[in-house]
Image 1 (tube, rainbow, N blue to C red):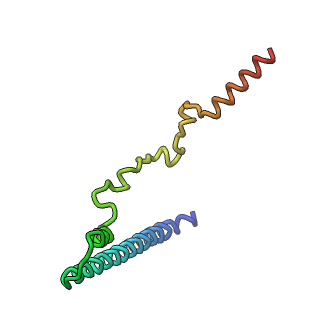
Image 2 (image 1 turned 135 degrees about the vertical axis):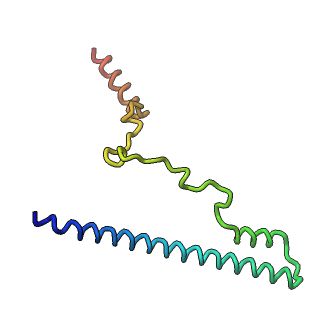
Image 3 (image 1 turned 120 degrees about the vertical axis):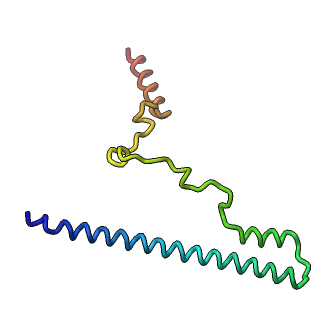
Length: 123
């Protein structure tokens, strides 16, 4: 009974820790995004200055600068969609491997074949 008085404190501290970790993750993500956009902006501004100055710039250099400024993964499917869903049964009891589902591994099949040949040779 004396332990039950601490349950609200444990729940509050867990919630506070969870919120703190989430906010820290959000802050780091925002900092990374800000740094990436700042780098893209500076690359594009340098390209604009070179084009306005009238200096001869090769097409390769322009495409290289544009590729550096592009957001990586543009037009691609997000990695979240490639992930498989994990249900609570997988979390609690573990994910079933192909061997658990009855699909034999090649090595297991070879071992069984070798054992069968040894048994036939003995008899």
